[in-house]
Length: 68
Image (cartoon, rainbow, N blue to C red; front, side, top):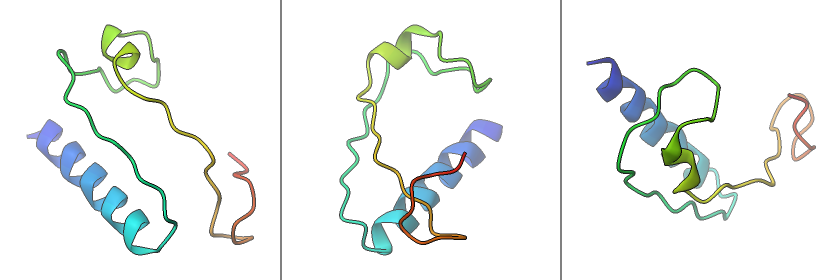
């Protein structure tokens, strides 16, 4: 149940990001083994995905580089 909730939240966040018109395209990929959500990217599945960057913040300064 927790995985479904996390996946739903991810889809919602990605949808909102796209709806705000940032023009970025994110390619999602189904991985062979799901990651453990522990902020450590040491599972094999992280080697199967394309990393993205170039994020900007919307608050407190719109389109500034992320502060965190």
